[in-house]
Length: 347
Image (cartoon, rainbow, N blue to C red; front, side, top):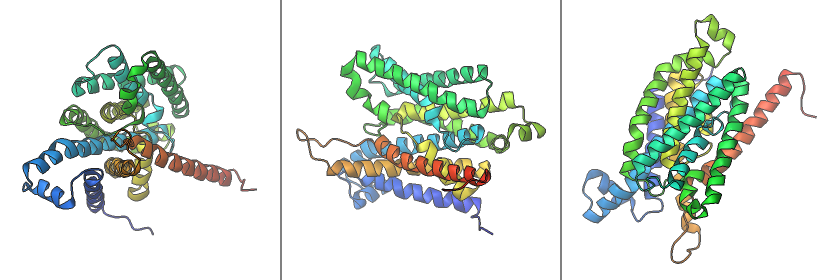
């Protein structure tokens, strides 16, 4: 029998891993040494080092960890509720809606320099994108498979509208790259202030509804037999996923595939009980973003300088590469499982 780690120990191990990756993220691509980092944490650093750590490195790490946790939790809820291992925030219309909200605000001359206002507008766009998906899915029957397919279509339409707006104002393309790809560059404490209340509410709600998610992931008949009112609880779970996704995307842009990677890692280690899988998915999402940003900053130091400055590699580019590999692997495993179930096999 496979040994299962006790939940408190499992969460502690994941927490320590996340802290280690966050430390690597804070050091990579900066002038801080491990000794400087330790001195900053203990309050013994000089004024310049302390300012670099507190005002530049720490908000980048903190916002990235919290956004990654939101995406991990959202992906865990979506995969269970839609019963699709390939489901992620990218296929719900929420991520594309949040990006569209930020772009619309900037194109119309909105408060692009105000992180809090921009985050709130992006959250509104993400919520609207998720709402469009629910309305369309409800008219189409509302089952899990149709919702997944329609989510891809809604996301594609919203992404197309975003590109049209950027084409109309090409001078904004550079500043909007972060929203389209996903990056932690330039994150400040204002972004943290706008993110943490929404993230806290979404995380608390996800933990509370996790027992219902366990029932929804099996099938509708099973859930109905146990008294779950599907027209109420499925939208509630999706609403929590929408809230978490919109908050994350509004803060760091479209960090694709974090919501795909983290839930699979969480279920592999923690099992199918979502009372444990949900918090582990949050930690896994945070660790994934920390790792991706560390690799992105390390890759940026290897690029040749242009006009005296090195071009930065966005963390979203790294998560896209990692996610593509994992998605292909998941699809291959699922195809093999279907072949075995139907009596087929490799030719």
